[in-house]
Length: 132
Image (cartoon, rainbow, N blue to C red):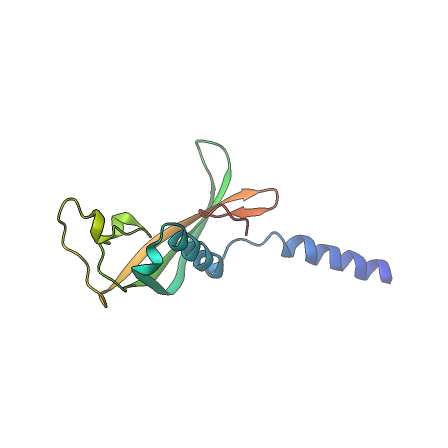
């Protein structure tokens, strides 16, 4: 009977550690990206929701990946330049070389982003190079 419970525990541990990235993992990746590029002073994200997920194999390197398509709300906290093509990065006013119109504090945008996670021996590696 003890061996049955041990076997059951091993199965739970094995399959529990093999879970795919979820909405919470995407939130952590997004926050890490914002912190890495100093965007946290300029905008905040909220309402991040997973809307779709696709598993596949990268044709360039043969590595398994898991794409999590998400939507989120971006709220501008301080004047900057942000548009969807920048992803989770901003251009501070001091780097506005092309005199593009600045986004103003309080502006809000709905944004769609796909987070890609690559399968590793230890779990799924996010865009922030952390294993989830």
